Length: 467
Figure 1 (cartoon, rainbow, N blue to C red):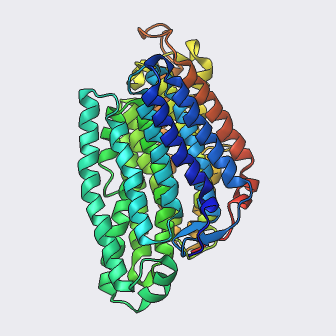
Figure 2: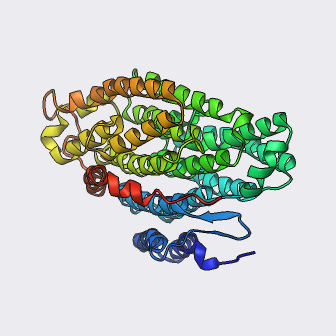
Figure 3: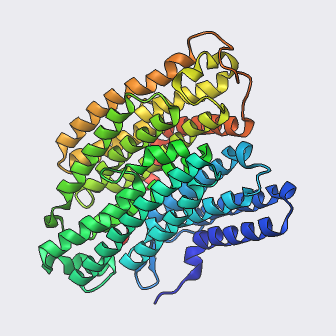
């Protein structure tokens, strides 16, 4: 069985951290719930350290779980994003009677995302999907207000429906290949019934597209982002995408290309980036704008998935882009959390005069999401575009380039009022959430640093993926 529990040390640390955080919150008074946050933060710091130190690429537990460059990237990116989100959330959760619940749900959602990234077996994929999804329902409705309950219900109903599709797809692929392990499916599926394989791939991929927030199961994203708290919205649009996109890459790498999935994946990528951008043009609410922005970003990321197995550049490009996106997206949401009450674009009028560092961070993050050098997303987009071109999807690169230019419009619509208008026009002009502002500045600096160091990082994530 190749049972090596220590090979799963980062995952075990996240699980132990969730349990310890829950116990702390259960026995400590409300005024001391911050101790639970410290326990959660310790787990989120220890997990990526343990992932990097002594890493050995291997398959464990009878080839059902892969420890390789892709899993290691998820083990580093997901906990660090979770750590930033916990700090970002302090102004909102501190003193709340459900403060500990928030920390536990972030840890469990992160654990599920990491397991999704490492799953090399259909059954492990199904279990990881559930673990990565169920905590999100609780996070979306965490504040227990009417609009949050509505957002959670919409997310739950679509998630339950799509989960059935994923489980059906797992059953179909297992029936077609006679196994659930990816390494065996890659050799058996080419001889299986093409229709059965195609149906299984589409159904399973639908579940992963839902997790990533891609077309055609993207409807939950803007409503959930608008209804949930800012910290919960950051989780929804950052952590699940890392696990889902790596899982989609692994799955499609094990499926024969003649089943037609490359064309389907390319169309999904084009439709997702285009629809996300078009819908963002008319948005005036900042969180809905960011929600549609995250949909478009998934379209660019999915370009690397569309050429899985066709070029060796696809996986490292995907991993670099995921790390860049996680940092930049977290920074953009941190700005929203740092300036509470500013729900629309016009609410940011002359904000730069009172909060120059926060608005400077917003400039870096929004232009970073466009793909402006020298930010990390620029490096991620460049490598993904190169991988798609090498994989024979030149038309998709053209579509992505056009969408990138178009996206500049709605990001600038947000930045324009921040630098114009009269200072003090907004009632809460002097309000600022300091922890969230610190996260915004740190994320902006980090995305610039990652962009400058993109070459070494690309080389670091270029390890051969194990099936």
